[in-house]
Image (cartoon, rainbow, N blue to C red):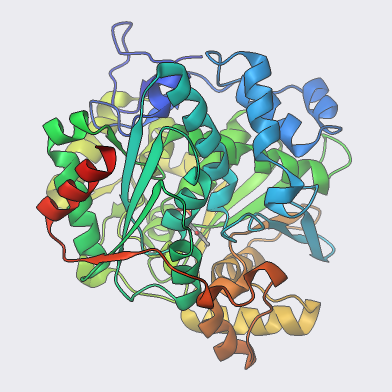
Length: 475
Ligand SMILES: *Cc1c(COP(=O)(O)O)cnc(C)c1O
């Protein structure tokens, strides 16, 4: 299997890479995102055989189609080490919860940080450790987080050989639970840095440090952001696992609704559908930051400025642009790298938008690729959290509530709708209290985590001071 960039011209000279070459890379050198050259096809006999597999072995089968430069026994061992009941809470890993006939939640948030990002990040931690050891190299992950991504990365990389994580976050801005989750990690290779500023200050630091190419090369600076192909690939697995649980035979179809921000989660659904998984619709649910809903309704992709980006009660979906969206547009345009490069490399940076509304390809987003979309507001979240509790005695988090609200608008008779549960309510307790008048339940292992010893250093947004810290840690 080879990987190409979404901005590569279609010619035999365009650069093709193998999995382990792109594993530790971010963007392709031409600014595009990596995708497999073709989507491997899963036939009915194979899908039937997969029905009997554990989650870890299903992951191995799917990953094997995309990874041919790690020996099979090693890849299987990595999958089995990653997807365990001890880490993900249940033997099913992603159990379906039936709300009523034809409506399910697929639980993706029982990993260590209680959000779906663990599903991919836990695998990434093991893949990084494996590949770095094989190369005899080290990696310093330097990132910025306002919550879920940073903690998922830290829990995935803690104690891993060859990897250090330097994670900046805006001082005092994360929820007390999120702060406790991250700052109570005492591992030597984890560096929590609370920046006296806002999230943008943290992101500017990352840009400044990564932009110093000499420093970046010398200290092996890397990232784990959502454009990493390995994360997307790991997420493909739970679409298959959800389908297998919801159906008896391969003639049945299901739909998924996906609470979306950077389009990473639902892009994995698109890949699963392209592989032949019988998915009817992929419904993209957004919050007030409706960049994606606007595109699927009108064909206009319009990046929002900072002033237009709302802080909402489903904060992990608060985006101004959707970093993985380019992958889908590349497929939608018949894999035309030159056109994709023009849209994302020229039109978006210059005009902040592009418009495919009049392009015949746009109609295919729905008709050929199964996409639909909808939007949910703070009031919708409160109403959905309340009605889901009253009707089914289930408490959902704010992101999952956005998904459920939009899913209701797209249900079809005879096609089960699976809503991806992307976080547990305890992470966003304030809104649960607002909706239900009481605190969400807390699993025993999280009781009292706010009182645990913390390891965090508070620093000003000073590029040189950060560089000194990284250099010292590597000395
Ligand atoms: C990251 C995240 C999302 C958005 O996922 P994308 O892959 O960015 O679309 C939704 N819900 C939760 C809880 C998240 O952490």
